[in-house]
Amino acid sequence: MKKFKLIRVVIFPFLPAIAYQMTLLLTPNAFDYLNLIYNVLFVISLWIAVYFLGELDD
Image (cartoon, rainbow, N blue to C red):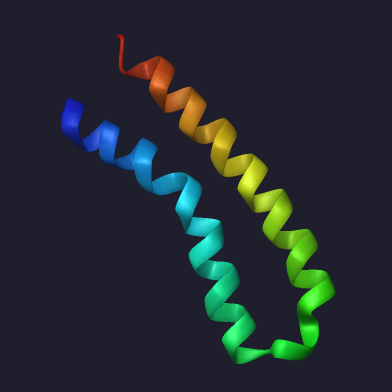
């Protein structure tokens, strides 16, 4: 179970980047809005990763 939590901690920060690149391929004209959304999702994913790092000790 600990390995699964560690994998989630490693993958979460990369999910917004993957979603950002995929959406950019589909709609290249929406760059400004995507940049804002990407930054917000990246910050949220980092907070989630920090939370799960704290949960690994339990």
